[in-house]
Amino acid sequence: MDHPATSFQQPAYSETAQKFLARKPMLFINNEWIEAQGPTLPVEDPSTGRFIAEIADATDAEVDRAVAAARTAFDDGRWSDLPPIQRERTIHRLADLIEKYADEFAELEAIDNGKPKDVAAVSDIPGSISNMRYTAGWATKLSGETIEPMAQPRGAMHSFTRREPIGVAAQIVPWNFPLLMATQKISAALAAGCTLILKPAEQTSLTALRLADLVAEAGFPAGTINIITGNGHTAGARLVSHPDVDKVGFTGSTEVGKIINRAATDTMKRVTLELGGKSPVIILPDMDLATAAKGATSAIFYNSGQVCIAGSRLYAHRSIFDSLLENMEQAATSWQPRPSLEPGARMGPLVSREQMDRVMGYIDAGQKAGASAAIGGDAPATNGGYYVNPTILVNVKPEMSVVKEEIFGPVVVAQRFDDLDEVARAANDTSYGLGASIWTKDVSAMHKLAGEIKSGTIWGNCHSSLDAALPFGGYKQSGIGREKGREGVEAYTELKTVFIKL
Ligand code: NAI
Ligand code: MG
Image (cartoon, rainbow, N blue to C red; front, top):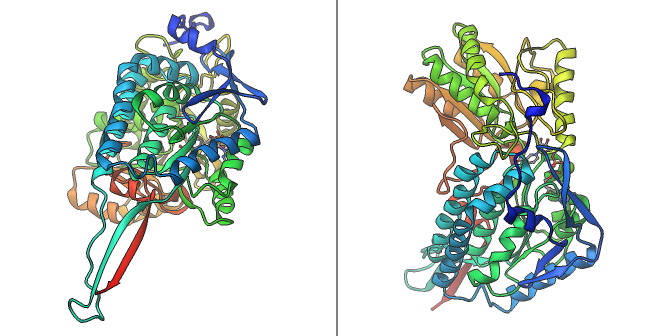
């Protein structure tokens, strides 16, 4: 389907959204909106490339003020000492309020990030709510254990462990799933009893600011949740090196993850890092091609490929490679980029000019190195906006940057393999290890590969499926620690051993 430039018309924003966009740059500290004193940052609609609002770029003094609010709130126990059931209920109330304003959240996410509103409405927003509801339950379920000492006579000592909140958490989230990442992080910290400062990405801060509106109404004591906007290298860096912050939770690039890990070392902050990926999609010869093609295209084109677990390296068995690709080219026709508020849109633009340039730069580099585009490789003609067509690169070699590096766009590199050992080696030939999917009905091959591949999550006959109850995180340079599940909440606790002589 070819669209003329003029058809990339972003539908009008709702009145509610327009009113929200007209707000002054503010920071949310101690349950109050504070007018920002420092510089501002422009907010852009990636579907049009137009500037639509301004947010605060928090100054050092404002970051310090937010940290001080969280520190005081933690130290006096106004949140951490509450009965756990009260913490659980408060998190649920915040989830209720997101649910109440779900349509508004979906529209803001679409305007800010570029993802289709229709997708945000069935995926990001309900996902945020269900993450919060699952995680809220851990407030009343965290526990230690009674452990019998090995070198003491029975009854001589009483020994047990308990979970205590770490303290003040700084949570820095990226622009690809703004509300989803924010709610996943804050709910884990809150369930554990921590207080927090959340800093959304400078490209996509709107839904976090809308969330701040609801914090006091949900019943959080002042200072429990503080939300500040600003640049990463200034506001983000200050949070991470702040001596009154005890824990950093970060999702973003591996490059910044390394900077954060180094900065955290000085005061030995606890860190959870969820970083980049280059996740393989492995299709065995027995697989039904239509199903595999549909799965492989969704794995890379969902969210315009701006997904840490995007299936960006396709490995198809030699015997099915050509027919699989034909099926994928067919399946890709339903992933043409459209403006984010267009009803029925499935894939939007990329988040920014910077991201579009990065992605087009990778495609160019790949083609110069000898790769060719089976489909896409270009951008549609538009009057602004950061659209890139779904792209499948073939004739690629393992040493090419398009195969090795995270592109974070709608670009998959397709390669052939002959046997399981070979594809396991190829899948592991990366510095990342976040996700991998294996597509086959052969149970034995499935389990063999699942054991061989070094990756935080392995999917069988699906890709990118996530669940609030299942731990999520990376091997190798894809990160440190796990989010979601019990582990995700325990990551905001210290484990204390109590050993009493009776
Ligand atoms: P980034 O890692 O710079 O940004 C993520 C967050 O980190 C933002 O909130 C940003 O303000 C903050 N940040 C940046 N520098 C910081 C610092 N020195 N200290 C503390 N916080 C800091 O990601 P960016 O530059 O927006 O995207 C670059 C590439 O990163 C993408 O092309 C993609 O490959 C990868 N990425 C991966 C994500 C994931 O989900 N794993 C999400 C976003 C980007
Ligand atoms: Mg960056």
